Amino acid sequence: MKKSILIISIFTVYWGATIFFTLPENYLKIKALKYEKIFSSFFYQRWSFFAPPPKFNDRLYYNFASQKDTIIMEAMKPIHDKRKSEYLFNNDISVVDYILSNSLNNISDIIREHYNAYKFENCDGKEEAECFKQFMDKFKKDFHKTNEVKTLMNYGKSLAKNRGLDDTFKIKFVYATVDVPAFSKRHEKESEEEKKEQFVFETDYYNLKTESWEN
Image 1 (cartoon, rainbow, N blue to C red):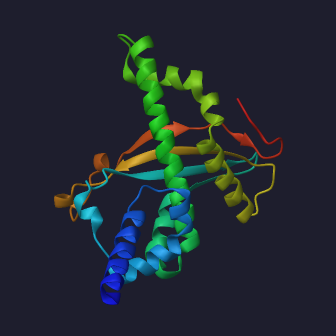
Image 2 (image 1 turned 180 degrees about the vertical axis):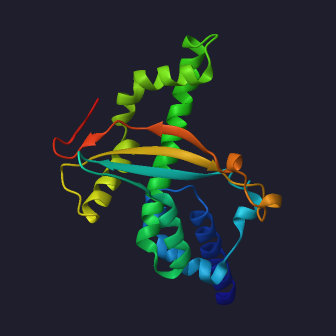
């Protein structure tokens, strides 16, 4: 009897943990990242085998500008490289990656949803590029108010602080994507066209001194 209870308990805990760690990203899952690493080290499973491969990688560029200098840096690739090189000790960087990636994905979803509705009502006969520019000119300031943009801008402020940039600098970020080559072509040299980035969203400049958006 005791043996049966033990087996049922182990089975329940195992599948409970498996279901929890394969749920979409949420606050509780992020907080439990260190436990996920322990669980995965003993019961590693390739659930991604059943999911479609990603079609693109995110690129997040921060532009720090002052009257004397301009600094541009891409934020996502260094994070991904650090996660790969420090897998067992990268809990903090994993949290940063989750937060930034989710913010970018949410921005993309918000823009796509609102743009499709806007295009249907306002862009009959217009070129796609013209329609999208018109849409962004009208609604960019509204996107500045979203939690996702605030989160990404706060990360930009932390980067500026770590680099020793004072409040004479202003910041903006650009979100773009780059296509992932097909699995069958993963070892082939990419053409310039295949490396081309697709623009998604760009903020106005944020003034560190006045802590406000510039037009």
